[in-house]
Image 1 (cartoon, rainbow, N blue to C red):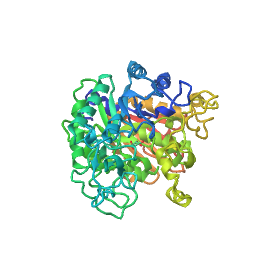
Image 2: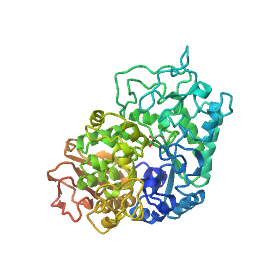
Image 3: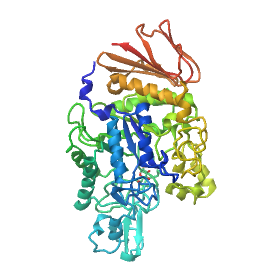
Image 4: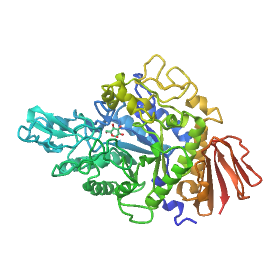
Length: 565
Ligand code: GLC
């Protein structure tokens, strides 16, 4: 039995999110770059596909040095993506289809081309000087950075400007100076920007690197550690414990203030999802304290990047679900994200195996949490290894300067891609030359990924056994069964959770869904299945999986069974 009625559970906990990288989705203007009218032309596809919420990577004015994550105007739209009118139309068209829209908000930094920064760097007494973080260099000459703080990407995060003989702080790339949130004018401006978009009907925001908003006010050095590579659970990296630059205690107060801005708005409730690489304990702190049985007072959701690299095996996935249930049980809720615009696509980590991708999708859409599907994941788009020397991605460009042996060393395991272009290739709509992303005479802004002649929407729509139809069936079932989006989760039998088999059940009121996932390359037979069980979904179409109270699972098969409590 559930302690909630399904109506008590907020919509953003039950939703499924689809992440669009606008530059790569659909070109309507004929310049080889995706745009807002292109996205509007695909809304019927998205509705029919079955997702409920659309998150767009930034479409604001930007010199595009980091493709929109370097904003030069927060209340205007980059002309290559469209106009403010196109944006308003997009919001209306999404709402008409009873879907939701989430924008990507980069609060931590702006572009160095933003008029605020241009003013700020012009003189020490400019009114915008204190909108960014400026500091004298180390004595006696001031020609050394103020302290040892490293940026997220390694190397000093301080950058010198001759004109005013001071250094500015940039947590990410040098052209992305950090805003100074200790200045109340900055905070007010950004909170008003949030209101500006909420007034236009935006249903929520994805908050870019929100764990880097504040730094130590006394500019103390970060302590030394032997750890070099950053990881999901610990942000220490590049031989530095980032205690003064990441997850600063003031961030946790800031997210609650942000939350109260969103709470000024009535139904439908708006939501915040934070991009934070941290342990689940820290992520929970960003969500704030429980205020009632369904809500907290911080961020509504955070990404758990722990899932990005979890092996497709029963034991680690079992452990991950246990970790989430231990720390993020109601009123908290985990998210399930396997791919995004910064990471190697999941299917490429699974050897581009479509059966494994279907199994992974079954996990993503049936475990307790909010699923985030990255555009093209539904048709099996793979990472496309593109040359570093022609990278569009500013991080790829940085790596292009490294000697080859170091690049090979860093990508050794194949699970890391140094060029984010690789996961941002154009969406694959049909088998034509440019996959229907733009017309055939044009050159898309990035080359298409391999396999687009077979792995595309129109080819897969007609094939009942395609990955696309597998996602569709799962999304349909999830919508129909409250147990799958709002139910509790428990393991059916702890001892069954070996390397090969994982099974859990989701229960809501009288409704029970049992999920059985075979992670091995061998078939499995499970006895003593409840007689009342019905096969509601299978990754293998028309499989005869339930016979004589036994469940037969083919290699990498996943099923959902329904039974009455
Ligand atoms: C986030 C974004 C990434 C961007 C960076 C700087 O990690 O996901 O694409 O480059 O922040 O804004």
